[in-house]
Length: 459
Image (cartoon, rainbow, N blue to C red; front, side):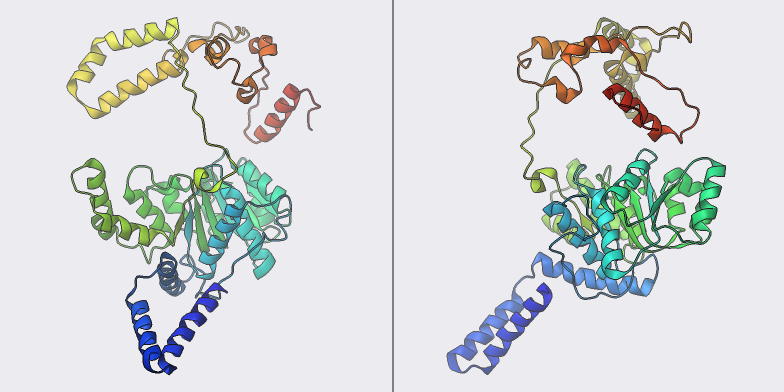
């Protein structure tokens, strides 16, 4: 591998210097001295930190990692069982990074920007473990309610050899799923569930030893005192992977909470992390402290081995640069009246005059509601449960007028906005299905979408 080649090269150079004579020997010693005194590359620093973390994680046992570091693996092509399509180069690079973490026995954060395929990279890691290491689970994926169906579809699409099931539904449905899968821990490779169900079924989920615990939208556990954060710490796991497009939202201590969840024996001191990094960086941002490049470099050095963050503009070269079209939209008559009445009220003026931060933020939020849609600010009563009024565009002509009459009318394709100029009459119609349960949501979406596209509805 790369490590063996580099090691052999350095060793050979040193040996040649010692065996040479005269000027060659002196030059060899000087060269060796320069190599010893020179700064390490980022890759060499990462390797040292990974090995140290791996040894410490191995001592911690389950939930701290999988064992001591092993020989490095670097894939040049995607796992054979990922057969539906071709992974992009940066996705394969992300898979290699995840494999590297696994082989060093440590956990990490996959923090790529939204749209770069974090779900696929996570699935490909589980596929690699089954294909190359014979590790077929069980794995636990905890994700928002709105994405668990997509997780299951992506597993079935990219790696159908991995058997997955959704732990969801009402109490009776979950009881049947637990009896079928969780009581014996067999018949599946991946269990996919929501935050809420993970909390409700913590007793059942705690009985199994999970190979990988993957938490999607992991910033949900940034508060270590939250119920969800406490529950997921109860699960016994060999490895933990956090997937999030926003690892840092408000302050560095949220990032520490994620790192502490991943590696509690390494990032164990809340106070030290706050003193070393959070307070100085916050001071730099607020302007109360001068920018200290050493602090920033030290923080990057610590985070780099455990966190992978790529942006679309850096890795997705096939995408053209984003072009922004700013279209000013005036408020509608009703929006303008609501806006002006709210600003003219005595309570609003008192709040703005008080200087209260929370009060002013609340005023801004109310004004934002007015601008987004007047019904968010002031609901109109329903006249009759059976009466359906035509859809009225109340928010700045619904942007259509600006596109129709503005300079972009001939340049912007309305198909990109899912709007069709030849079908304005469709704006006055609704296609709705009433349901009293959440379990049929994916079926309803498929049925309504099929009906609107003019194809036969799926059963």
